[in-house]
Amino acid sequence: MCNLYEHNVAYSQFLDTFSDLRIPLVFPTPAAAPNLEPREIRPTDPASVIRARDEGVELVQLKWGFAPGAPKRPPVTNFRSEGRSFGPRRCLIPASAFFEFTGAKYPKTRWRFTEAGQDWFCMAGLWRPVEGDWLESFTLLTCAPGEDVRPYHDRQVIVLDRARWAEWLDPASDSATLLQPSPPGALRVEAARRATQPPPGPMLL
Image (cartoon, rainbow, N blue to C red; front, side, top):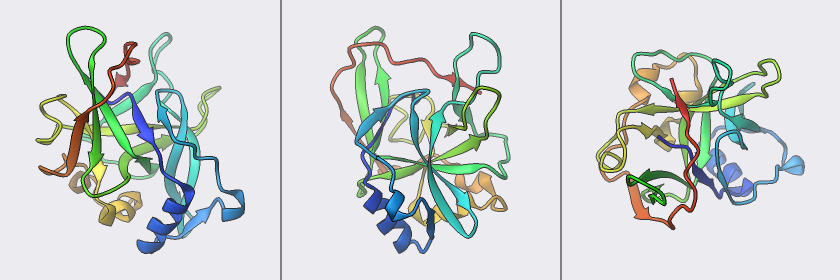
């Protein structure tokens, strides 16, 4: 299950892409552009999230992982999409790549997945408001793996086609038609540098 992804998307890329898609990026303003340094993102890290606001979308920084459902449990970083209907609080999680790991013991082989023909993409997610002392947060939605991911894991994050980003953010749209495995050839995979420490273990609902 995905518990590590890469973000290397400049703010200007957000502006250009959403302009091309005719989706107004209404906040933050260019004068208040966030600091989007290239980095790898792990559970509980703050990360960029795109969600609906007014007549457009906003780019905010939220914590990766919903609050645990019980004491001493890990945050909920991945959430099964099958058999569920999602209305409000949908969001897009921008990324340059996501990672999966294979192997029986550490250091495991690390695999880097990117979207074919694109420098960056968006994964389907959900966000939640503040819960007690837990900050606003998000989780990644998952489904059965497509052909590109199946050799490496039995689940995959949902990479949404750009033409359907606005549809996903519309709470009235049919989420089941959008939350599907990536079609064959949609993702590119390459062996990345080997992890020197075990990846953190996510919780899946």
